[in-house]
Length: 318
Length: 318
Image (tube, rainbow over all chains, first blue to last red; front, side):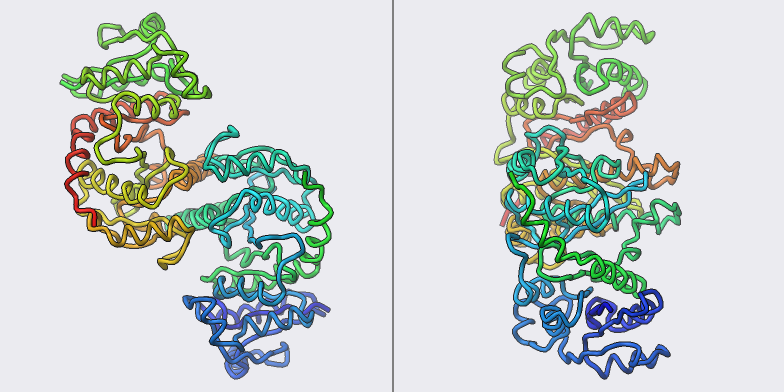
């Protein structure tokens, strides 16, 4: 009996792609799960009918205002109180939905989350991760990939702990190895932030730290969790997309490299907030939205936010 | 009549790979250019003979001490005053060689350069670049890719100017477009460093600034020069190498993507020092060393350091 909230107005291709993605996801989610659509009711109903679907297959919550992708988040949230994001967070806070997913304005998503559900106890900054396939069948989860452009060493340690819990509990990797993304393997490498973070990670008992990892070796299976600041992580994420774009342009097909297609994942959970939230890529099309909904269902099934909350405050930090 | 200095002891595969690379380069450089080998004379002579070459084809400058790749640069330079790097810089400073190339300890290379030839007037930090091929036949030169992990906004502006001069004068691209590597196109994106750097770059008349570029679009031909701090740039550089490694492992061949093989370039000039210096990749093999020597010859022919010195102090900064 899960309720999966979807922001119909979120993303460059919304609302067409979000409605189409919701219709496609409906065929794949559990029978007793419901997709709850947040947005202007008339638009939603019209688009559903246009696609040969029906409003009765969904729950629709009317939210007439829309925050655009390029709008300044703080101003937009103030000026438009009944936007789809803010309304959905109210439902999430009241546990009227089990998870909320949006490919919309990520700044607005984060600020609205802090203003409504807030952070888990002890967490100073939320973060998002990106899980990359490794050719041996494992994966390496990079975090933060976008929320925190400026970080403190202590924040990187928190990311390491959040990432470890996420990877062990949700991706089911036992005692995941944690690495610090850096410019060399020696502990004196990198900027001052990374030199200090290395020492913190090394002395923490909360994680299985294996040292620095160079970007060249990221895909070699040396770690299951890799920590960095949100600026560096976002550059890494987008560079991977750039490479995938080149491969596509050159008609290079390879079953391993095809997994770098972000559309396959669709969304990534926000770690550290007091509720299950999934952020989608702004350029998400129908396929990405469908997969974001499936990811959201899994996150809700596995009670991500509750598990993080329990584990985060029981690990031994030092 | 160019003299190209080569550190025979520099790099993981030295001295075998450096000697082999020098022998291979000898066939491709101009007839009246000379390769000057710096290192322990007995080792050099023995290896040359072993390869069927002869010491008389080269100039050999005896430097008995060796700085290892993992040694702490400051300590190593103090303890071993007659190492191949320090001896070569003396020759470069006295203009007894026209360019010096090494795939050795990059920290030692940089510190020794500051202690001998020093910086060009007005330059606060030297930097290194990596030039990436763009599928339309152009290129995008990223800098700094490794020397400066912590940067100030003003340093990024200097990189932009050094990069512009390098790309226009050496790579012969007229009025190159300069972008700032960032997490989004809007000018408020990125860390505080990048937000401030954006404003400086935008208001400078010394460069042709076209705004932020996302890593996803780096290879799309939107800029010929892309500026970032040395930490981010090094991660970008090594991630590109990581992707090339994956392509190789999967036997994917493509004439465009093959250009991502760093061995093809072999080395990159250090911009901002008072002399022509080329840094090679620590993992350079024979082919990379050969190409580093050819790059060095071109840099010397085009008088890189002199041109940078002239132009850097005549551009209108604001």
